[in-house]
Image (cartoon, rainbow, N blue to C red; front, side):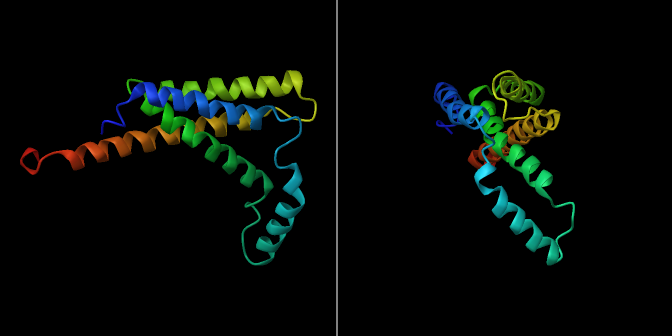
Length: 148
């Protein structure tokens, strides 16, 4: 439990996590561009073998955006345990908004998206929920049997 309560460490981890996230956000071309052909081929194969059409590139991209921000929510919750889910969601929205604004202003081959704001924020909130649940589970397991 001591590691979970080391807020300074988690704040450092959060800052460190933002560096590779910035590379993904501000890479001059879309980061999936080198694998778009392979992804399209895999999706065509899956659709031919019964996977529904809604499982398409847009769905995969949105899911990847959610997954990208789940760790941000987890670490934010550990770094700032007094934050509510709303504050963690607002933090995820702020980071995502900065990324999308940077793409709009500086990267002509990248396209800012409202959907990215929603999926990134959702990922941060999902991560926060998972972190809160995990911390509570650890606390329950550490209670002596007499306290139950």
